[in-house]
Length: 237
Image (tube, rainbow, N blue to C red; front, side, top):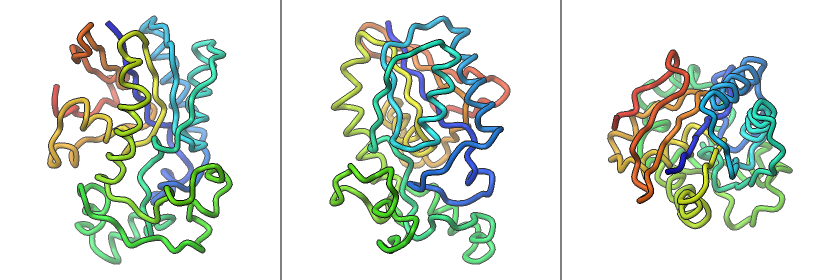
């Protein structure tokens, strides 16, 4: 028996401003820090010893992880992987979602946010928001850095990393991943065999640990959000 705990980072400054964030590296708000602290406390109540920790390369996920580890009194290093990053929103990056809804229509914005294989227009490579111009990604091979992504693109990079680096370790380890709405959505699609329609409806709340229990055959036997007041429908359970 083992556990996988998925935590979407706490509220970020651009979450608060309703901006498409993607690969831009922004910090947590005070509310986000409180959400991360509560996430740590909720994980602590389960009494599960976490063996391995993974995070995206992004500051908001890293900071969430550090706060959780402080609560758990852990000093383990955690693995940071760009493959667990949020979806790249292309030319939408930095724009306000409400304003864009008024400009191009709510249905179009929803399509960009939740469709399976629709990519926004590519972000120009000289933009200050392009990952090529953000110090966080200086060690990521330039040919692997996207200009835009669909949810399908995000799924493919997240799941490739998960299968190669994490899945086998689940047989003997309890693992916690601090990541993002779309990278966690990708993991859920894979773990729960969701179709493209189901994945578009899956909501991932900030700072609310999703705990998944596996049996000795690596089959899921339990799945639940630890903060019941902010839990979202899991579609599959």
